[in-house]
Image (cartoon, rainbow, N blue to C red; front, side):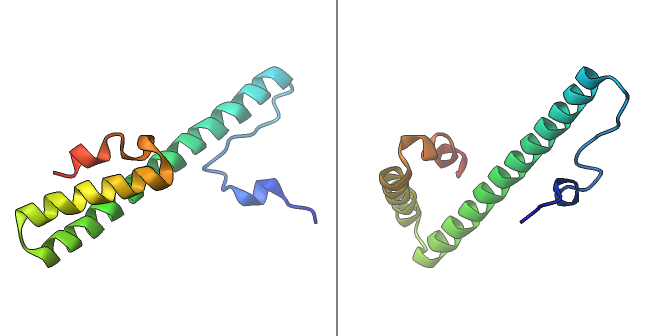
Length: 97
């Protein structure tokens, strides 16, 4: 099965112009791909953190007490570390407050 790689990304995402200079063209392709990848990762992390915060807030509101909310975050952090390792909770837990 053949995949047209140019159809997978819009022209706004990647730059490619055949300038006749292979090195310059390769650098432009790599730089464009890296810029696109960084943006995609940043977007994914923002959405992940926002959705986690939203879900935790919903859980805290369900419990109705500050002590309950603190316990929810503590338990969730512990459970996520078991599933994903300690790096998953690197900074978001302290940023939730």
